[in-house]
Structure formats: C-alpha cells, structure tokens
Image (cartoon, rainbow, N blue to C red; front, side, top):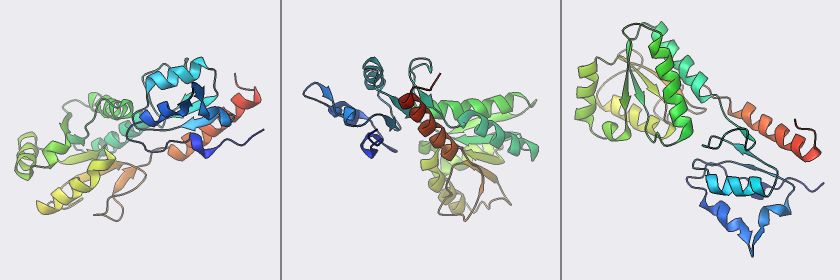
Length: 223
C-alpha cells in the first residue's frame, strides 16, 4: 500500500479553495495517495461531495454542513467543552457571563455557542452576553458593556480574540482573576498570561480517531 501522503493535509487553512485545483486535466490528483485526511477552517462542501461521489477514501477532521452519514468526519468536542467551561464559571457563582466569539457561520463556533447556552439555560437568572472582535476594538464600548450587564466572567471561545481580550483587560486595569474571571477554549494560551484557566479541546484524540477511521476504510474493515 502506498503511504497516505501529507499532500492531502490542509491544516488550519482559512479557505479551502485550493482543494479545487487538485482536479488537473479532469483527474483528481489526490489519487496519487490511497486516501487523505482533510482539515480546514472553511471546508468546501461542493469539493467534499465531489470526492465522496468519486468514492475517494477521505476523512474530514473538522466540521461542515454535510450530514455525517454522507461523509466520514471527526469533530472535536466543541459543544461539551464549552458547556463544561461555562459550568466552571457558574460554579464560581458568576451569573452574567460574556462569551467572546464571532464568525458564527463556522460550524464549530456555533457548537461552542450552543454549549455555553445550554449551561446558562440550566441556571435560573444566568445570562450570556455575546462579545465580538469589534466590541473588543473599542475600549470605551467594551467597558460600558461590562458595566451595563454587570459581566463578572468571560468565556474565550474564539482563539484569535484571546490576545486582544487580555490586552484590553490589561489596558482597563482589570486583573485576572481578582477583578474578572476568564476561561478559554483552546490548546494554547495567551501571550499575556502564562497559563489562564482553560478547557482543552480533544484535538489530539480527534486526530488519532481520524487516522484510525481512514486506515479502516483503506483496509475495508470500517462499518
């Protein structure tokens, strides 16, 4: 068996239009490998459907809008992790929690929002306030938002907004955790803090499951 080539991996791509150029002269160039694990922030559903129609063995490591019974995919635990992180703050008696998130067109961001909303719905009087990158860019507006809603804790659900969040808190002389609690959904931490409270997503485990699933497909042992 030829090795599963790394050429089939698209890790942390902002857009996956590059998948389309793999059809050269009408042939799928991925056929140079027995199968592929595909990743990307914005998976192209049309390309995924075309690969499935060709019966090319692949596993999508990430989220998309195609039902799981139509393609092989493995997702990280975005919804459960967000639920757990929100409950951590609720257990600390926070009732007005800001969630830092945007780009809700992304399936995994919608899952993170859903997890936080589920936890909030289980506690009478608890509120979830959405905070976007645009809100973080205006210190005066952000400070007013915090006061208006009496926000005492933040859930960092968007990796790219963690550093702006901590920079803003620092500029407003808000200390973590003395003045405000912060918990992050991430495998890494902000440059402004050595190790904030965080809930780690199971990305390593999801990657291993994706490799195992693809191997089973190639060996003909998958269900």
